[in-house]
Structure formats: structure tokens, C-alpha cells
Length: 128
Image 1 (tube, rainbow, N blue to C red):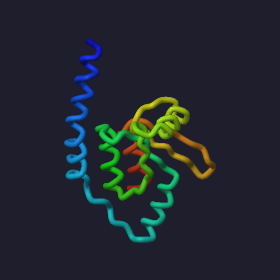
Image 2 (cartoon, rainbow, N blue to C red):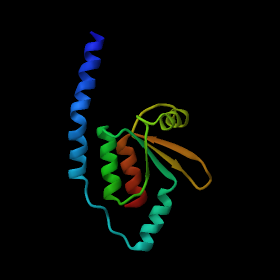
Image 3 (cartoon, one colour):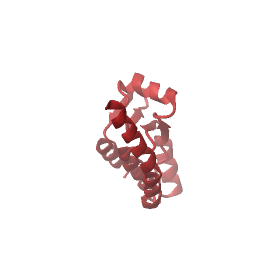
């Protein structure tokens, strides 16, 4: 019975993946337009951020749409298909759960933020 459920959900994921990615592409909003100097400052601040994500995770799609809306150039790290990213997420954050925003401050301290709504709230507070 276990193999049945595993096969069913794997098939469902395979069938739904193209539709989810197409929906993301169609509904992704245009980004905020900033003055070039302001955008360079934002881009510089984004270098200390990285988003661990799965390509078809609905919560990751939600966060990526917000990144686009805020015109943020944050590194997107695939924790599903790239073992080194998955291992870094497990070692640093303590669990393999996405989306996860890795925040490195000026002193080199690292904070791991889970939950899409918390990530979006943080990004709005810092960049909106």
C-alpha cells in the first residue's frame, strides 16, 4: 500500500510540475523600479542573502514572486536537486525545509529563516 501512495504522489508531482512553473511565469509581477544608485545599494545588500528552495514548492514560488516584485537579486539555491545545497541547508539550518532564507550580517553571523510569510515580511521590512 505504501508503494501505491508513493507512486501516486510522484506521478501527480510529475504531471503538475509544468503547470506550476507556467503559472509562476505568467503571474510573476513586474519589479519595483528604483534609481540606478538605489538599485546598486539594494543589490549589494542582497549579496549577503541566499534562498534555499525547491523549484516547484508552492511556498517557494510565493517567495520568488515577492523577490521579483521587490526587484531583489538574491541567490536561489536548489536544495532538491543539488546535494551540496541540501547538505548546507541541513548543516546550517538544522533541517531540510524550504523555503529558507540564509541571512549573513556584516560581522559574519548567520541566521536561517524558515516560513514563507516570515521571509516575505523580512524582505518587505528591509527593502520595500
